[in-house]
Amino acid sequence: MTDREILEQLKKLPTPERLKIVESTVHQLREELEGAVEHGADRLAQAAQALLADYASDAELTAFTGLDSEPFHA
Image (cartoon, rainbow, N blue to C red):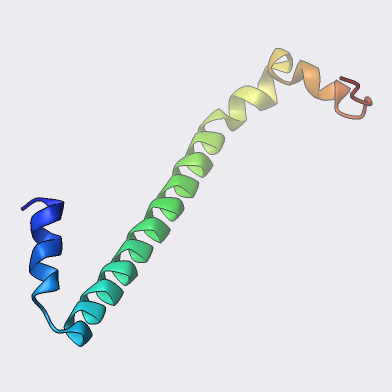
């Protein structure tokens, strides 16, 4: 079913039903977005954990962090 067909079918419903469908859809989208954000944060944490030993043992990977206290001028 296309977007246009869905919208046409929604127009046939009484307003309270349409509002209920919109509210349910928004609620569902929010849940999906929250899940995606949490999943992304989990993946970043896993990647950081996987690289922790490399950064702890390889000084070349952290060489530029010595410059963190230097002022930055564009």
